[in-house]
Length: 155
Image 1 (cartoon, one colour):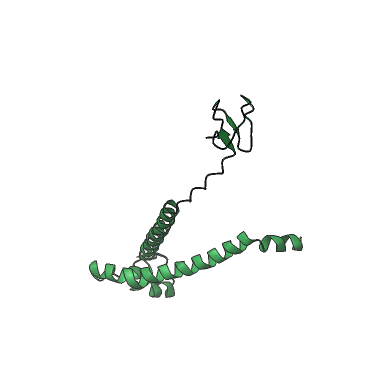
Image 2 (cartoon, helix red, strand yellow):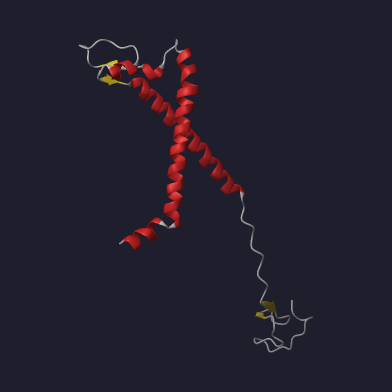
């Protein structure tokens, strides 16, 4: 069983998948940083100084109100974090757009890279100069009309 697992794990496609997952996770962190640190602050500023990461609804009204999500979590409040959800939706839209652009470019490259046409195969037949039938290029006599052929007779 260990030998079979080792063979499975060492296949090329499993290793490629592992590398893809690791790169995907790193790419996800980059996108999260872009959204949280680059896109959301200007959007919040345009919307009147709103900080999306601290937008939440307090579901525990008997507890004291908190001004930030960190304070709410410290106070043990039950919250709906719709600001973090907005950040996650924007993350998804950016990732989907980037993947769309990459796939679009790959498809465009596949279409523009034309496969070179294969060189025509050397002809193995010639035409009899008397009966105009196709015969083997090495023939010296036509099998159909039995005429003796010379290079001048073959077309």
